[in-house]
Image (cartoon, rainbow, N blue to C red; front, top):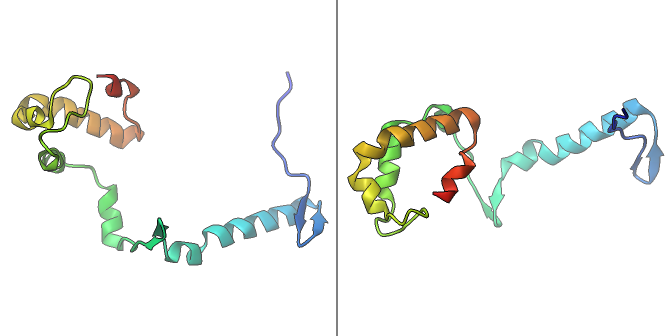
Amino acid sequence: MRRRVNTINSQVVDEVEITEPIEIEKHVIEFYETLYGEDYLAKPKVDGVEVAHLSENQDLDMERPITEDEVCFAIRDLRRDIVVGLDGFPMAVLNRCWSTFKEDIMFLVKEFEVTGFLDWRLKYG
């Protein structure tokens, strides 16, 4: 059985071909350090608009578990007349019946926190 091996045998830098593995590695590292270095991260932009960095406390806050109160607030903050799924129920139903749906929704939130994914079957109702 043949295995594919991903290698870079040569690289052209300033119109000069480099074939020495150590030099290739050095230039690849330099390229990505320049691309993603401090200057790149200093001024993030979305659609050309500069976006402020999070403070260290805000950054740490993003890593903590999502609370039930936050989920409840987010659901209550949504427009009540929109239908988000194929079941045809508007958000007002979820708001009024939060105590019924709370356990299942919080299970999904906790699962998302652990895996980083939502079950694909959710979008099909």
